[in-house]
Image (spheres, rainbow, N blue to C red):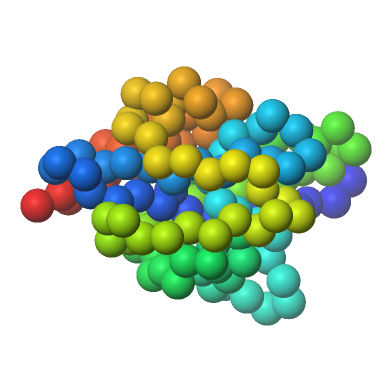
Length: 139
C-alpha cells in the first residue's frame, strides 16, 4: 500500500454578502468536488493547490493557509489518499475556463446547493468547515 497526497482549495467569491462556492464535475464520472490534485516533486501543499486550481480552472489564486481541512480514505486500489484543502477567495465575476480533459462542468453555488451537489460526505464535511471559517472572516 502506498499513500497518495493531494491538495486543493475551497474556492469562493462573495455574492450579496455570502460566499458562492466553485465546484467542478469530473469529465470521467458524475463526481462533483473541489479543484485539487496530486503533489508533484518537492511542492508544498499550498503550491500544489495553486497549481491545480490554475490547471483545472485557469484561475490565478492565492490560498489562505490559515485554514486547512483534511481527510483521508482508502482508494479502490488499496492505496491511502490524503487530501488537504485550503480556502481561496476570487473576485466576483471572474472567468473560469475548465480543463476539458478532466473537467466536464463548473458552477458557482450557494452553501446549501454546493453541499447537496458534492458527491461524498467527506467533501461535505470539508465544505462545512470552510464555510464556518469563511463566514467568520467575511467583511
